[in-house]
Length: 374
Length: 260
Image 1 (cartoon, chains in turn brown, purple):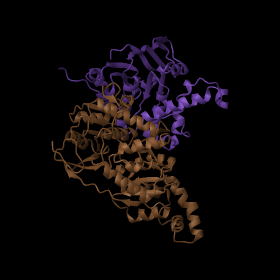
Image 2 (cartoon, helix red, strand yellow; image 1 turned 30 degrees about the horizontal axis):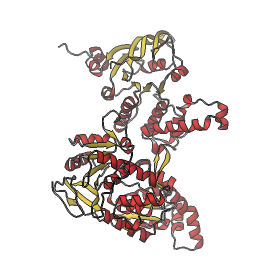
Image 3 (cartoon, chains in turn brown, red; image 1 turned 45 degrees about the vertical axis):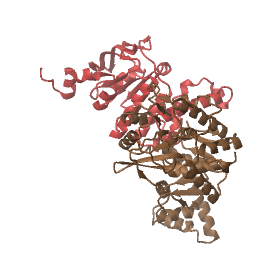
Image 4 (tube, chains in turn blue, orange; image 1 turned 90 degrees about the horizontal axis):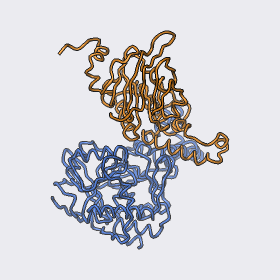
């Protein structure tokens, strides 16, 4: 299948696995080392998961609620649910515990992927007994009777498992609590692939990109500007060891494609400011002079070798070619700073249309734009 | 806990130049339990820990660990036998990285000769990989990955305590001795450390003997509490039993509860 013909995310994955099966698709730092999966391995794992989900009763239109920080397992179970024509319903893993419990109760899904012990605990606090509850991090759960991701992924893939996803079906739904009111928004396969193609074209993305998926997995910007382009362009997607190590991991990796928000660029800006001499000091004035790219060849060369290059190394932006900013704009000073480093973030819209949940049941098929009350 | 005892002390006496530090102390620690040693300063808690892992030799008494009875334990034999410990005052290699400190906890697990290690031949390369993987598992378990390559001496105190715990845990001990693992920590750090101790006990089945002054923490995480005062044992039981023991209350509060 040619990449342009795929009208849904799993079909795009299948196309990549057929086209470049042996190439590295995904890397994840685990136990201090980058572990990698090829497109072919990724496809087999997703098909194994889809087989397990189907055996547990997951069918077209069902929702798999995902409560997890960014990690490959969360991505792969999303694709498995979508393979069967289902929806990956994402909750913000960094939201307050009460909010997560309220949303879990609201969604009342029969299928939940909870990252670890804390998340499983929240499912229980919500009073849910899902038909399938499984986890990725076994700490504290090995004797709990809850199924592990590893056991589901180890299921041999059913060869003739058809892709049930269609372009107009919802691929991801996002959920939040705003002033005590549950809200949600959706992205269809067609929307995601359309935006992905636009990004690839505009930013001239190729299979040679290295992208870092360090943002909260539940952010819609991540699905639009990272996951869909990854499946379409076939570049490498990298997951940090944990959110706490993402700055170190970015430095090690040197990604060419970076997706961030106002907050994530703000954190990098603060990190850089800590490394620089205090504003107003003689050295800082000299550095500001060297950073100003309006100067001549001497100033630019000095600025490049003495400042831009080391700073970009420290921030893990040494190879960054495509810095993307999703959502709110950066303050002028940090925008100027990143521009001076040569990595001025380019803004892409977040454009999430949050709607009141109206007690939606997730276990219903919903073509994009249609809302089916419980 | 109904498990058989992993550690039994009987009639332990210790004096320093005629000053009695420990008098006729005996108790049992069941396999898989968290046992807390509590008592005022100078009660002999750290001395007792030092006797268990062989730093001090008791003048009288017997120690039975993992079914083997000894008149006295030697530190090296204790470590080989599966006893690891942390110290009241952090005893890390301050100029080394977190990873290197944790790797020192794996030294007794190495089987290659010094020559193989020096020249990286024979068993050494594969063994290095195995030890690194084992150290990384501990680093992940205690969530110190962000500081893996940091020099230990530059880390905050609470993190150094966690690194010391990681080094002890890297030895895969059957019995983990923790000497005031939460001393000097704030409430948040104490909560985290308590959680790690409970998880170590639950996930690896490691038996833990710990000294701690924060009674709230002790009562919250321990299965078994032994109370010492002036080198004597004055209480021994579950947290609930100890909490209501008149002698313990008197030692801690300086008064006896009113008769019922």
